[in-house]
Amino acid sequence: MALSTTEKENALNTLNKRIQAIDAFLNMHYDPDATPSRYKSIDHTMASYNIDPSAFEDRSLDDVLDELDETFTETLFRFIRVKKKTEPEVYKTANITRQHFSKIRNDSHYHPKKPTVLALAIALNLNLDETKDLLKTAGYALSPSSKSDMIIRYHIENNIHNLIEINYVLYHYNEKPLGPS
Image (cartoon, rainbow, N blue to C red; front, side, top):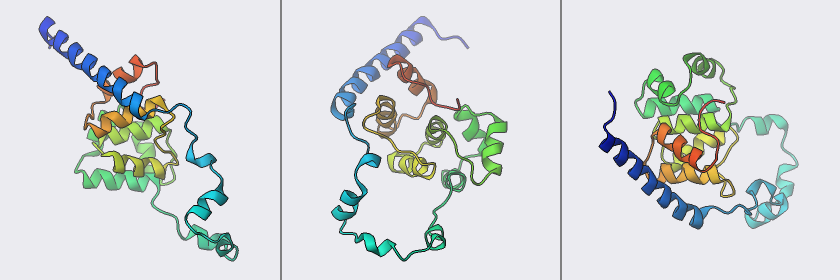
C-alpha cells in the first residue's frame, strides 16, 4: 500500500526531528578523542580495584577456562526465550537470512560481526544493559568514540527498535548500516 503525500511528509518530519535530537545527544555524549578502555594500562586498572597481580600467578589455564561465561549463541537464544520471540521473527526483523541464522544456531562458538550483533539486539528490543551484555559475549562494546555506536545507543535508550529507521539515521550521518555485512 502506497503512502499518501501527507503520510510521507509526516514520516520525513518525524525523522528530521529525530536527527535534531540525535545531534543534541551526540554533542553531549560523543567524544571522538575518547581513549577506549581497552588501551588503558592493566596495572592502572588492577590498582584502581585494589587487585594484587600476584594473585593470578598460581592459576592454571584450566582454572581460567573454567570461568568462561555463556557464548554469544547461548546468550542470544536465552534472550530470544526471555523476550518470547520466535526465531523467524528475530532473524527477519534483524534482516538476517535463514541460512545465516541457522549457522549462528548450530555453532555454539559462532563469532558475529558487531553490526550483526546490534541488529539482533534491535530485533529483540533489548534495553541498553541487555545490548551491552550481548555485545560483550561477542567481544564488543559500545564506544563513546564511535559516532555510529552513539547513534545506536540513542535509539536504544529512547526505545526505538526499528532497524530501517536506525539505518536511515546512520546513513544520514555517513555511517555503515546495521545487519550482516
